[in-house]
Length: 581
Image 1: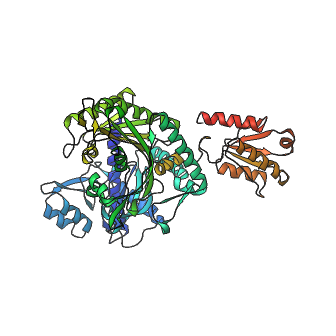
Image 2 (image 1 turned 90 degrees about the vertical axis):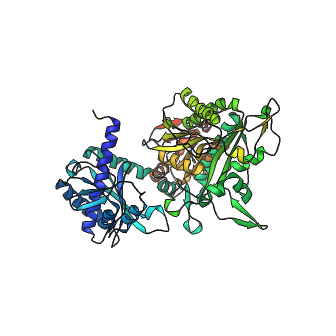
Image 3 (image 1 turned 120 degrees about the horizontal axis):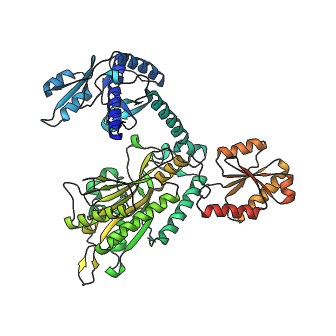
């Protein structure tokens, strides 16, 4: 039986090799094409081209047919190592390859792979021959624009995405998964369910929360604050802008300026929109003399930050320029750090469970080989605290040796959604840099001034990205406690509109999110509309219900039952909400 790592390696070779076959087919079908790069990626591959003419989706089947023809010729993949000058000569008509050759470090091996008449600059690996590529287990999926090397100042290229598997059955399963992903796309559901919008004409990467989306956000924020207070945090609020000296001291202007918005000139001083909340929390810390008796301090903020992202990488709610971080900072003594980290980890897992995510994996990133700040003893203690917390919670984890930031080790938590996709969400990050830069101190028990330990912590990451993941996880069918509309009252005829309005008023008075559909549509069309809006409960109201003072209830799953009264139905809903169902 094939081991998981063997399967991963095999699929990588198949996909990388299929990308080369696609490049050969494209160049044959579209003479004058210039080739760029074509790597294997998770679940597929892509290749970037500069084409002599625009490519249409209708062209993909023709490319696939030529690829199948190349595969059928059973061409071997042959590796050859060449010198720099020979490589330049071979690719003299390929400007993107010449640039890659130019940027290769002196002394690094330059290898080529050829199949038939096609040769590419490539490190490999590949399958031995095209005969190992299942001609009925690949599919070209889409066409997109991509700047050369991801730089918007460079040439826009045409990128073709594809997928390749070991069998037709695997391909069919994957295509079904893509269909489900398309149905659950948060951008699509955002429009259909009237949750949010973006407006390029008013500013790219900025989110407009509509009433229903804002209602869910308010529920999440209320839950978030309640849980934080219960877990020993205090909530703070800080400004959106700060003077340049603040960002110079924090190091953002030295290391992060390309991701910050341009300064605003106010009173002859430069102010910047904040890309992070941490310097503001530090100023609050420094507003008073702190003693070891005051620590730990746990300060949380739903703080909106602004970061400049290239327009090409913006993606719905998942990659934006303005977003609200569920940020927190913990300031504590060295003796408190282990217990604090364990508390944060348990808090994180509790939150993910409440939102319906039970498959969570940890990644522990340790000290980088060079450039780290902070004493070695602090790094060792911090890393051990992170490791102990993970192991106490019996979490599966992967060690990312040397993957920590220069200012401290960290834990990243990744969750799996209902489609099995992994999302990076929670970060628990040590910081030995900021306390030094801002000269933070506390009075220890012996009277000496010492540096506090500082931990950055975001549980949901950002409300925008979290909301996008939440929409896709549930396919827009939010659990009852999060649903923006919990109940829709549907009168069977216009004569019962007033009764429906009275029922909704009674439900609202009992703190349920209810509305009445008083449109001129027929009852069945109203039921269908409520189901399409994924409302958890529909109340069908006619003469019998009006006379008896009862409710005929239908759930979005199709279950039907009678409720004795508005009060008893509301009690049932509240009981489910209390259980976060």
